[in-house]
Amino acid sequence: MRAGHEQGQPICPQARWSLFIAALPAMVFGAIAAAFLWGLFNNNDSLPSTMIGRDIPEFDLPPIEGRGKGLSTADLRGEVSLVNVWASWCVPCRVEMPLLVELAQTDSVPIHGINLKDKPAAARRFLAELGDPYDRIGADSSGRTAIDWGVYGVPETFVIDAKGRIAYKHVGPFNRRALEEDILPVVRRLQQEPNA
Image (cartoon, rainbow, N blue to C red; front, top):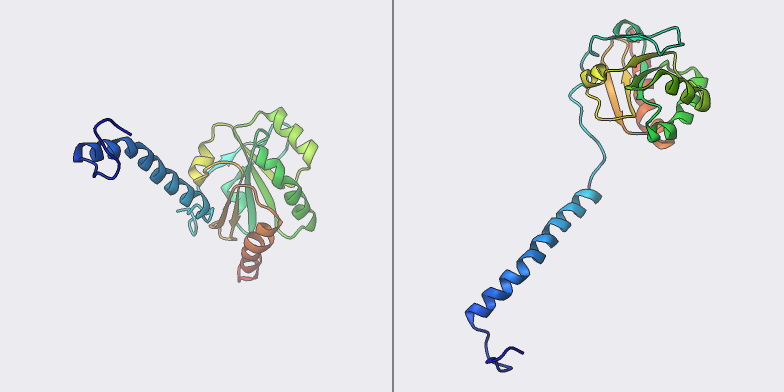
């Protein structure tokens, strides 16, 4: 109890103002924390892409050292395909690689890779350890092609239609549910279209 203040007496305006000023940082912190938590738990994890429905960017990437085929715009026209942007230093890429290898074994859709800012020896070790699902891999050592594709980070997977347009983009590693419910239905729909 403060001196000069008896229990039951109203608090003077200066004391109220002092209490408000003292509590203000806690209220601001609480509001920021509430907004952060709301955003964290109410996010649908989708990042819109302005590339959907557009032609793939013009590019021509050399192969990873030790592989025969690079990847270019011309390689992605004429059939529905997947393009997976990955790197050996990417931990989430390790998570999805077994599913990519499994998908490649079905021969249901060609899978191509863009290896982002990687060392050739590290990329080859990664593929030797986890499996190589790719028909072609282009080495994007500068990261310029990934920027042109609108890549936010690795891994990212694109579904490309037979005309060379981006039909779908999956950001981050995909699991079996995302593969079966999101990615493959787009692939199958595109494969059934005329000229696919």
